[in-house]
Image (cartoon, rainbow, N blue to C red; front, top):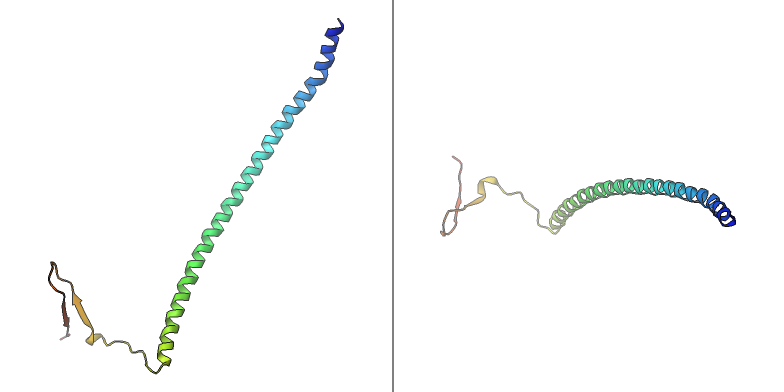
Amino acid sequence: MMHKGRRTVLSFISKPFLILFLVSCAFGLVYLRSNFLTLEYSVGDLEKKKAQYLKENKLLLAERTGLLSFARLEASRNDGEAFVMPDRLKVIYIDKQKGYLPHKASLKVKQ
């Protein structure tokens, strides 16, 4: 009879601890899942910012290239040689012919 009483005391103590442990594990899983979702949202926001900054970087590089090419033209102009826009009437057009024939170069004159 005494042995049976010890079992009831042990089960009386262990059952509430087991239930408390299971409930705390369930809340812990919910907490971890919510933190994981928060991290996913923040990673998504950072990826959007990264894409935006990459676009801005491309635009800035294109603008820089344009400015450098203009600066190169200005530098060549300062050397004493002025940059002259070509006259459209004196431009040589090269027409590509089919086959292995040499390319034909000619001046086209408007009439």
